[in-house]
Length: 117
Image (cartoon, rainbow, N blue to C red; front, side, top):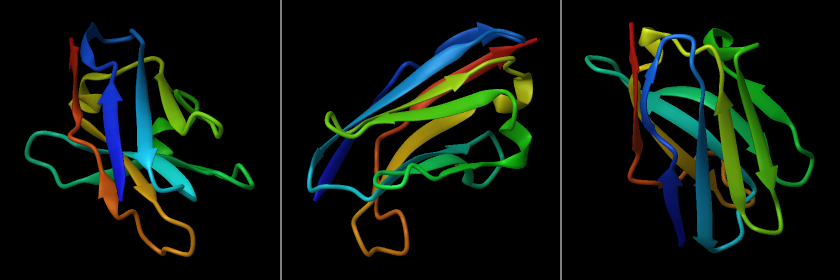
């Protein structure tokens, strides 16, 4: 089992920045990432990073604005969000998957990010 706790959400004006953090405890993970669900929208992937090789994925709509990073020893992942837009308003969820798993099986409770005009 993996327990995930997100932090760092809040209210920010358009063009501002926020840094989200996620701490994992329990079983070792092979990858961690961030997903989000905006009002009236389904859950969508934002960014992910693998633990061993450090491969990184970004959704097209955040490339050049968001940066994902990790600390393997502490089992933490961060998402630095710059140039935030109102369309980024969503609940952001941290997720993790175990070695050999093909999907993200563990999810945090989410942290609210609200971007005002």
